[in-house]
Image 1 (cartoon, rainbow, N blue to C red):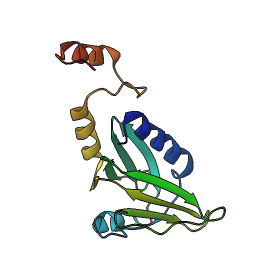
Image 2: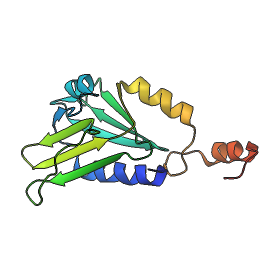
Image 3: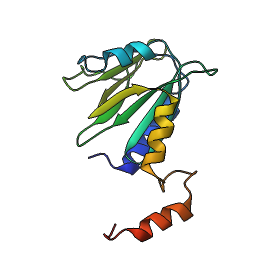
Image 4: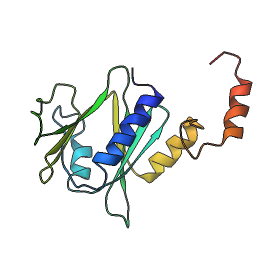
Length: 155
């Protein structure tokens, strides 16, 4: 299962490798066809991790941005391959999104329980409902501690 720290690690890798590039987007298993069409040819602007959720922003800097919300579930993965250095494996029946960047040879395969398309309001609403993420730099430690302090179960 992908936990919060794993989502943050995936976000950091995607930020370093994928952000700033424009991809051809497809949905190999057909479960994210409309979403792939919406981000196809749009620049990957940024990625945010909030708890076990990943948010990817695509579109022109001037906006509006399309937001892909990802929750990996029990066995999700976002793999990135460099076709100039390695053989890219075929997609699987669970691959909801494939991003290909012809100039660099980068190919990414996303398999996850939840992959939804929305806008920046989806991000702000979901982030607010999730609460403070202690792994984010913008987390309010006082709000987080107050929430944790009210829990009746141990963490």
